[in-house]
Length: 98
Image 1 (cartoon, rainbow, N blue to C red):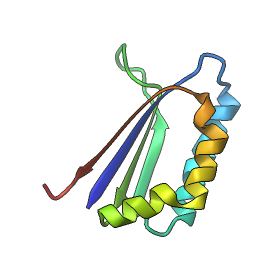
Image 2 (cartoon, rainbow, N blue to C red):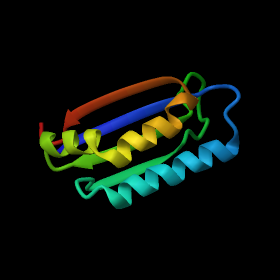
Image 3 (spheres, rainbow, N blue to C red):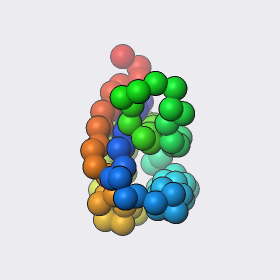
Image 4 (cartoon, rainbow, N blue to C red):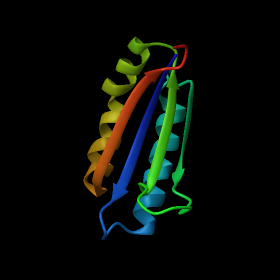
């Protein structure tokens, strides 16, 4: 099992409507890309300073499934639509069964 985590810092001029649209985009990928076993996403709760603004966590059965997600047209379209809103992005993938 592979876990994929993405952390986003929005650009200062990103609107709440754009953030909501990105949430709808994450939900759309969760529902349309069949290799996604689970996907959770949402804004930071603001419990401490220095955090990112938004997080997404997705699980995949295998590295091959993660590659299929990465290369899926819906994922590419999501990035093309929302990628420009991020001032900073951190990504990590790790094995859950390690």
